[in-house]
Length: 252
Image (cartoon, rainbow, N blue to C red; front, side, top):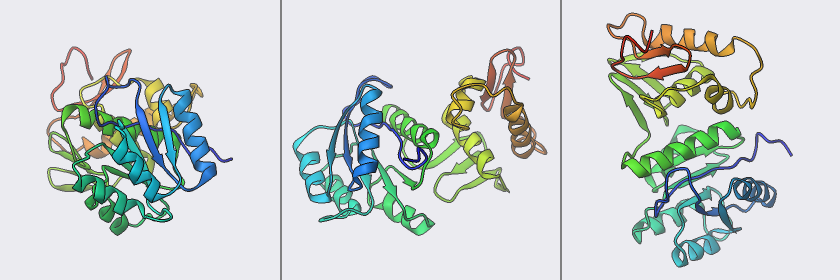
């Protein structure tokens, strides 16, 4: 089974300690994909309950308190968006990650308007799915919502895949976009090479290449060049940090 198609995740409702145990509802009619997700999430220490159709998924979501839900867009008996809309109507605000094979912008917007917190198209990489779920968890804990990230005058729109700084459009390659997204999700934090390799490149080891240095350099030239103040900083001996103001003693 290709790992690129099915991947583990996490999100929240009655919020446990960030990064801790979660009770997750997975609503997915693809038995192979569901088995892979249940296995991956369970091995990560979470409790996963699975529903194979929309009607059962809605019943389970109403009857139980879940920390997060993963809902497929196309489901038998009741489609995923109507399940989410009904839950939101009832006041259930548990974070929901929508999974779908429909990848155009209008479909993403429709999913978010229905009450989804994020939208990920198939096939997807483990690193991207994990990062998005971590972002949902973090936003749920901090009260930050939406799909537009801001650091100073830098803005990243997750749905339109658009980046601007001071209103000026910045064109990024897919890997550069993913790298910037990850850095923005960890604004003010030192991000190590290992973190970038695992979450942006899906490497669980250091391949001993300069891939990170090259991509950081390219990204910096696009988001910082021709602007008055740098946002992307190198923290000597540690990694990188994206922030509006930095200490000259710590960054370069």
